[in-house]
Image (cartoon, rainbow, N blue to C red; front, side, top):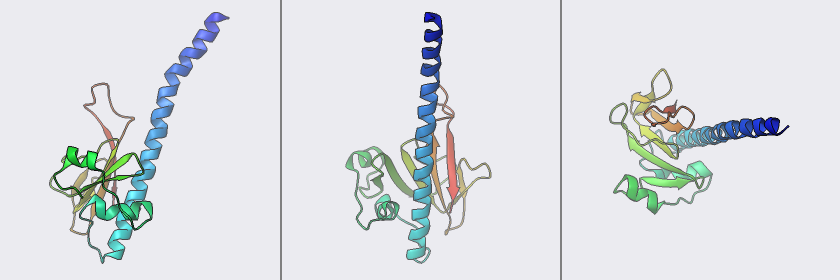
Amino acid sequence: MLAIAALIFLMVFIALPALQRNQRDQARKEVLGKVTSAVTTYQSNKRSAQPGSGFALAGYVDGTTATKVSGEHNKAFTSDPLADTLIDSNYVLHVTKFVSPGIGQADTNIVQVLTGATCDPTGSTAITGSARNAAVIIVMENGLNATALATSSICQSI
């Protein structure tokens, strides 16, 4: 009887972290969708112009005209105080012009908007696009290995 209870507890302790990772990844996918929609709305309202900063895009993400800057995240990523903006209380929105594949700051808590880029056929990274294109990328937690050398990211083209 004790062995059965121990086995049940073991199964719960093994399954619970995977379930929590899946829930956090689902939340990341929802944020990715919100940011993608915000970029589309921004472009529509600004005659196909690209957002220049997270600050400019934040109001479109949360549906308000007010935007906010996250000072603690700004110090970590850029000298421009308007480039990074906190959205949904957990994610930093970082907007930059696309430079080259593999260059960016997307992470599990950083939503990267790369202007002038589109997603590659696998949907995991950005490649060169037209001036009207943008790619939105976030890294998923499932897919990270123990040494964090391999990541699983999702890229959505606009």
